[in-house]
Image 1 (cartoon, rainbow, N blue to C red):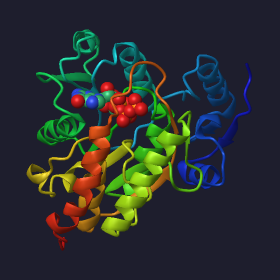
Image 2 (cartoon, rainbow, N blue to C red):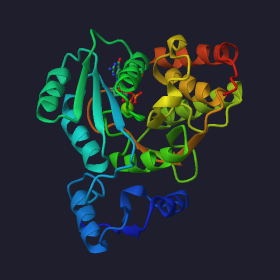
Image 3 (spheres, rainbow, N blue to C red):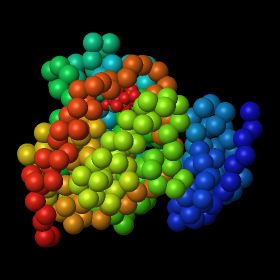
Length: 297
Ligand SMILES: Nc1nc2c(ncn2[C@@H]2O[C@H](COP(=O)(O)OP(=O)(O)OP(=O)(O)O)[C@@H](O)[C@H]2O)c(=O)[nH]1
Ligand SMILES: [Mg+2]
């Protein structure tokens, strides 16, 4: 199936079009490459249902690692790792919490064949927040300059990774945002949409924070800035972890940029979202206001 594709010369032009409603899945960023060749690579990608594949992965010039926490993501793991590496020059860190479905063993076998892929195994389901904190520490110890957060379930379009990486050259935290012009959620029912909207409204109002998508989990951190935060005192999980990290970056005076993304409901596998995650956010958010000091850099 042929789909309409549009070319742009660079990411600045791409962002302007996406904000005006163009779907990034149908955009080819040329980056100086031959237009016909880039178009045919992108079309090939769309036909395989892998998005507008680039001729070459985007190299932002920083040492990047995409941290992918996994719990029972066996079916998603190989395709998501493959797509991440197709779009971005980066390493990948899979943080698996002893998934009963064998995701951890599969991750080991992917890593055995590709030196860019690394695996951290943890004993039992310890939660998304601590998975990311462990990943951040791992990245800082090894001198990575950019650390991405990304779900394994294809909710976060891998073709948007280069846009996040590019925006991170001029920001301390980039958030792939559903709630700025050009962003959206696809495939969620009314209840789930209201829950997410409500959580964001509540967090913004309670914390007085300007970020539109406080709960979004598709992000890129400047590792050096991230390490200046007091990460030992972060203990939130789920939605609340993302709210807390955005708030801490904001309170520290760091530059946060939101770029629009289309968030899509998971392709396969089961959701780990539950009432506990929502309750945590409800009670933790007001506490953050008093717990997180405003810092002067
Ligand atoms: N390591 C680790 N990963 C987790 C844990 N909980 C969720 N994940 C992973 O974190 C990512 C986001 O989790 P999801 O299940 O998609 O949660 P969600 O996005 O809130 O819910 P849905 O997308 O609606 O299913 C996925 O890659 C999960 O496999 C956990 O306790 N430990
Ligand atoms: Mg998900």
